Image (cartoon, rainbow, N blue to C red):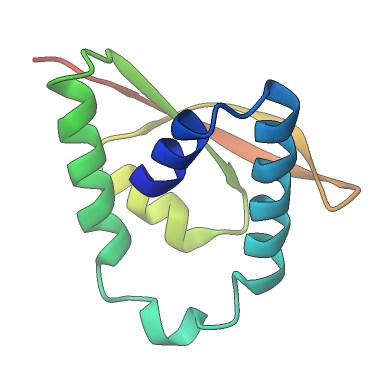
Length: 112
């Protein structure tokens, strides 16, 4: 992600160009997100990454809360969020690939 941030800053992309680039990256990710799923699932990679992100958010970014919007049938992500200290704070319908799906919202209140 640092390279992407650096590239967008270095080349002085317009807001429209940034949005177009982010959409292209998102579309590519969504098309390929299950391609290697079995290889990486259950190894704790996301938990390790999220712990680091939360530590950075608490430290240098001075962020006080974080939110996760998780599809109700995504038990792995729900389990991860709860293990990291997120609590269920509500639900909403979210649009994904032109369909609405019920998602739970989880919140983490960060204290130093």
